[in-house]
Length: 370
Image 1 (tube, rainbow, N blue to C red):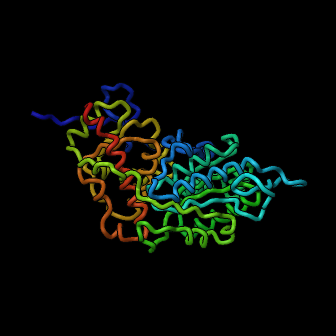
Image 2: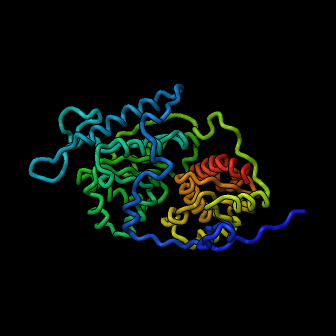
Image 3: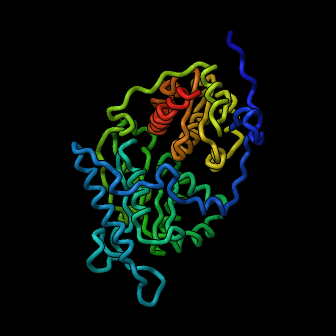
């Protein structure tokens, strides 16, 4: 005869007998200094390098991107202070030749989701010959959060001393934020900071394999001439030759796994969605601090777009940290309704489904051990 497991206790309970943690019991507060210090590649990409990226032989643009980005990294190392001023001189992507301050100081990685853009962007950060504190890496949302925390002018002063700024998932769907960040990047380019970016697709541009370079270059307006687009063709690597996502587990299996796994959280999905509405997305990374697995019961379709976009951010933070997800209820490909998947944020939702599916695969061992 099966018995119900008790409700999880708050996250501060220390003893294993107290049961799993709960995300709903966490209300992290993140000081502005941490926002700056944490602008590094996420833990999932700590060890990635250009030589760990495996280009698809059927997609020659992938190997070409590695070659060009390697030259771009060397070019950053070739910069030197211009005579009579603090701005650096910049060389071409090959790292040689004459200074060309009017030429490209940025590179834009243009490709569909799952072709390894973040892997390459993080590899560029690691390859750039500068101290870690002189390089910054973050998502577009993290960059706008930094501006909100520090103010525009202080953010310019903080980042102007950097050699490289990498921006993952540049948001083209918010005109106000796009103008704000474009203005910031203009200031940083003037200060000699090298830029690298990936982006999502504008609302209404719904082709799954569609490339966004033209939209990106148009939206950043005066900065367009500073970027060299690099097209990266390919299919979502998380689905290359991999089995289908595992079906959802039962509530009892999810609870048993939560109680058997040190550092696991246990929450019912509707309650977690409600809690996310009370925590600023800039704090979702801190929400996941110290978590070894996320166990969710009663997964169901999200009710509205605001909730869906918050879930996308949480999925990104869990994926960055390689936190496996064990779930009961609806499968992850049923999270977003047909109206959402046909709307302007379609690409974000497909990315979240892809990443949560990968994390569900990662959780199979936990179920087996429970």
